[in-house]
Length: 307
Image 1 (cartoon, rainbow, N blue to C red):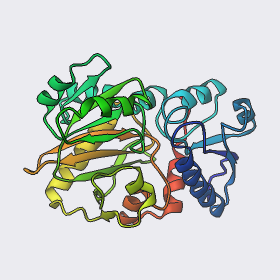
Image 2: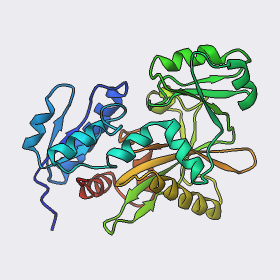
Image 3: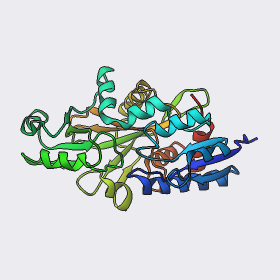
Image 4: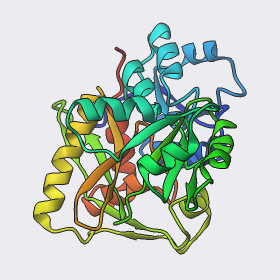
């Protein structure tokens, strides 16, 4: 017997720089829910007032970026008393902030690439020397690789900072780790535990896994099995669960990590509302674990909560 969830709103679109990706994610989620007989409807917060959500029983959050993934929408739904999917207010806000996530991980003994905050009055040359070149510069509160750049030559940090600062006043410079990019999907279980999905290795054909490689190109490789040894993958999955839980995340999400040339891994960032498009990583990992897209969506819905 399938549970009756009542009237379900799929929140999609929104006002962030990731709006177009969110529309694709939400449309895929909405179609899956309807296939499973759920009374689901699209709801774009950029086009409808939030108080209209009072007509719904549950919200599936398929928003990405600011005003959807950063705790703002979660707080609104808490005030409205409407159950929603994914992490709560605090964890969503922290995970959206790469700088604060990395500080928490560092305090918990979870390896992450060396990083520094960058501002307009920073000593750019000194930061380049401390972190080494190449290095990455990114807005602390953006996703989908928006505003990110790779600094390969001395003197390039200032221009990279200015680009990132157009998206967010909080900008970080991060040590380059060049042995490969990977990701671990996390899925909650009905007994309140978590399941780490199979690791995926990401092999972009351009210089790094940027917006184009994520959403537009068809030649980005996704390797699952990842190529890691079973022992190494199991160890990283366990640490990914720790990285997820220490921030207070719940429901589902994704933890990205890098590998260096010596086989040491470094956790990069946390995603509390990952993409659900045909290029997205959590559905790929779920499929490798024997979980269909529709089943994945239903499991996410079943874990909806308030508080």
